[in-house]
Structures are given as structure tokens and as C-alpha cells.
Amino acid sequence: MTEKLQRILPTVQKPARYTGGEYNEIKKDLEDVRVRVAFCFPDTYEIGMSNVGMRILYGVMNEMDGVWCERVFAPWGDMEEAMRANKLPLWALESQDSVKDFDMIAITIGYEMCYTNILNMLDLAGVPLYAKERQGLKNIVFAGGVCTFNPEPLADFVDFFSLGEGEESTVEIVTLYDRAKAENWSKKQFLAEVAKIPGVYVPSFYEHSYNADGTLKAITPVAGAPKTVTKRIVENLDDAYFPTKMIVPSTEIVHDRANLEVFRGCIRGCRFCQAGFSCRPVRKKSSEVLYRQAVETLVDSGHNEITLSSLSTSDYRELKQLTDEMIPYCESHRINLSVPSLRADNFSRELMQKLQTLRKSGLTFAPEAGTQRLRDVINKNLTEEEILTTCANAFSGGWNNVKLYFMLGLPTETDEDVLGIADLVYKVIQTWKEHASNKKRGLRVHVATAYFVPKPHTPFQWEKQIDPQEYLRRCRLLKDHFYSKSIEYNYHTPDISRLEAVTARGDRRLAPVLVEAMKNGAKLDGWDEYFNYQAWLDAFEVCGVDPDYYTVRGFGEDEILPWDTIDVGVTKKFLIKERKQAYAETVTPDCRHGCAGCGAAALLQEVKCDA
Image 1: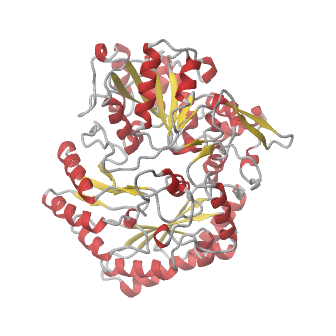
Image 2: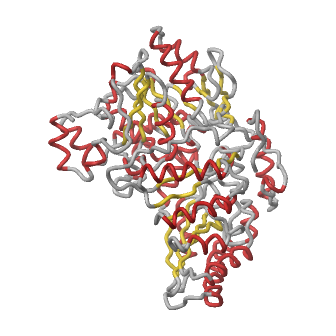
Image 3: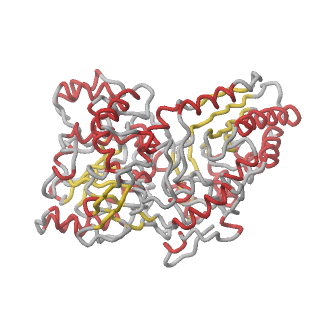
């Protein structure tokens, strides 16, 4: 640790964010290292250390001979101020070496509103922002994560993107770099070769041209690049790398517990959900492997809580078998077992009764829409009867706290649909009055509404986003129809969701906007303490970019989309079909009731879709 850092640490919040030295961190002798990777998470330590994907890839790279992967997180504002005042460049936790001294800079991107953090971290590191300004093999910047399914807003800054699941492709990428460095390749030669790895997208190998009205005219591959790049998946999750010796943070993090991923993908097909489409096909781990990994992780880490995670955990076929094994272990070792991502249509009172012996928490469900018509539009495959029956089971079992999540601004939504949310909430309250076994504590119903953001690779990718004023009108309309003191209502402010839509559906013309916003002080945009909407508005104005072009305009089905180069496995033909189904208010049954032909199964070579 440098003298400057020692002097700064006592003056900032949570200094443990910046010191490293945690139990199970990986340190290597530099004499044995050929490739150094700075693994950057563009948010704070407590967010990044809660990310399972980062933990997996950290372990994957450090398992490689001659490779040392170190962690880098975005500093909080007080630390950044001190770093700039003391000319202290951004460093990696394990070695405390500057990021600019590393061979490769890997970035995982899970949220569009961290784009300015990425640029700010490069700037803090003293690394040139634009890919064309970085010559040679030093500081090769590559990125992965769900946001890279539309990589275009970051295309000018990132040398290449690794699409999809990275356990296997990351090894191939770093191995190729190791060879390139040993043989003294040029950057151009390395990019030409890395583009041949399945799942790797090199944006400089694609030229974008535009029509007079601003729409994309063409995306032209150059240098022999393929027309589209298909994401990578891991077929056999039982054999995939999973770190049971995880780093134990030295300070509190957001998800301060062990985390067990039970399966990937989703059988449901909710038409607004990017993860539900982009993470297909469904692949699961066996309950035997999960139990072993759970015990190994808990024994090594000392955590007193473990979470079974997925996009919809209650859809895991072996959930009963797994929890039947884990609950006795957790009881005997005083460990809390958490099973989030439950659905109201397959809520198991039996499972909840077992879990409440460990800890009884509130129930959370996401009906998303207040009327059956609109739930059919979005393909939620959830009825009011199922919601109320689930609540009745929970209330009779002793639960008195329920959270309900909805969206406003969904395609075809009317005021009747908005008021349907209030109607459904009052039916939940009535259900509690009729079925609660414990009425002394009273009932709390937490209702939250989000501003619908149309996302790439979904049937709603072409939709308009309602404007912020209309969203707020609908929020007020709903709030005015909540009369019960049992209801606590929160709604997202529209500013961030508007920017999320811009960056989610943006193209390469956003690059100067991102730089300008960063220069205006935009950073840590996911945090209320730092979000500065005006910094973004000023950036749009200076750069001559209209954010409405990406939001309220919508897109035509025959229009070339910025992300058309990226293939997530689900065909555009299927997405258009699902969009038509939405406007016809027709549901598509989930994958277990018959394959709908989305196309994602074609990604599998050896095993079948586990739906």
C-alpha cells in the first residue's frame, strides 16, 4: 500500500472497499505471471462483490497457468476526489498496482446506467477512453455481461465484447492473448484472431451508416467479420466451474451471503423481460451437485445465509429434493436458507412452512399488471385467482407482509389497467382479512411500480416508451386510489428509466454523449446520492442528440436495429410473432407445455433444453 493511500484511507467512507486482503483473495508471484487481467466492475465494492458472475470468472482466470486476475471497483465520490487531488491512479485490490500497468482490462456490464462509470474508471486509471487511441497489446479492453447484447453505445471505447456466458470463452480469449503477447503480435493482428473465437464481437470490424432520417441504413462487416455473432453458452452446468472458495468481504456488501445458482434461462417468456429471452435455453444443475457446492461454500466462507438464485427459482424441477436435503443441514448449523424469485402460480406452502423454521421474511411477487387483459398482453401467464390463492395460503400460514411489483407504461396499457392494480391490491387486503391466522400484527402491502423500458432481444424491443409526464400522471392516478393505511406505495422516478431506455436501445452516436456526460460529472448514476439528470440533458444538447429518438419514437419492424449484429439464439421472426400475439392479447404457454420454437435450442449441441 502506498504512503498516499495510507494517508487517504482514514478520511473516506468504508476504507475496506479499497484495501483488498480479504480471506480467499488470490495473490500470485509476478515472476510466474505472463498475463495480468484487471477485472473491473463499474460500480462500488459492495455491489461488485455481490455479483456471482464476477466471482465465477475471477476464479476461472486465476485457475489458468501464468494468468493473474485482480479485482477493480469504482470508488465512491469521496475516494475519487481524494485520488484526483493526490494524482493517485485507479488500482487493483490484490497487488495495489495501477490498472494502466495491466495487459488486459476486463469489464462486466449488467446495467446500462453504469456506462459513465466505465469511462470514469478508465479516466481514473489514466487509460485512453477510445479504443483507437490505445495502441499495441497493452490495456486491451474487453467487456461482457447482459448489456453487451446491445454493445453499440460502448463500441468506440471497447476493443471487443465477449457475448454470453464466459466460463469457456474467457479461457480461450486469455489463452490467445498469452500467445499474442509471447509472439509480439500487433493489436490489429490480435483483434483479427480473437474475432474468430465464437461469441466474440469486434466493433471496429463493422461500419454503421445512417439514412437522412437518422435510422440505420446498413451495418457492413469488414476485415472478413461475420454478419452476426452468436452468444456463447455453457451446456453442462454440473461440470462448469463454480467457486466454492469465494472471497469473504472485509466489509458489509449488498448480498452478504453465499449464493447458489440453480439453473440458467427461463421457461416463461414474459414479453418485456430481456433476461428471459437472452439467457435461453434453460439448463439446470443437479440437486446433488448443488447440495455439495452449498455445503462446501458454507463451510469455507462461514456465511450464515445462503440463497438459491435464478430467474425463477420455483421453476427448478428438483427444488423440493434440494431443499429437503438443505433444510436439515441449515437447521443444524443455524443457517438461513433464502429462496427468492418465486412465482405466484407455483408457490409452495409446504416449502414456505419448512423455510419459516429457519426465518420468516416477507413474500414478494411480481404480477407486473393489474388486469388479466394486460397480463395476457405481456404473457405473464398468471391469473388473479392464482395470486389471491397464493396470498391466502401465505396469510393462513402466518405471513403478514407482502410486496407486489408492477410496471406502468406497458404496451396497450389504459387507465383501466392502471386502476386494476389498485383493485388487485384491495383484493389482497380482503384475502388477508378472510384468511390471516395472525391478525394482531396487522398487514403491510408494499406496492412498487416501475417505468417500462423496452429492451433489445424481446418482443417489445420495437415499442415506444411513454413520455415521463404520462408516466407520472399514471403514478398519481394509482396513488389517488390507494386509501388503506396498510398500503405503502413507491414508484420509480422517470429520469433514470428514460436514460436506461436511451442507452439500452442506443447506437454508436451515443459515444460522445457518454463522454460529455462523464465530463459533466455523471457517475454512479444508479445511486440517488450522485445521479445528476441535468448532466445528461446538457450532454445531449451539446452533442446534438435527441433522447426521444431512442424512447418515445419507437422502432419499425422493418428497421435495422443497432443490435442486429448480435444473435442471442432467439430469432427475430419469433420475436415479431410474439409481438403480434401481444397485441392480440394471446398468451404463449411456457416451455414445459410445448416448445414455441424460439430458436434457442439450436445453441445446444449435446444436451436438450432442460425446460
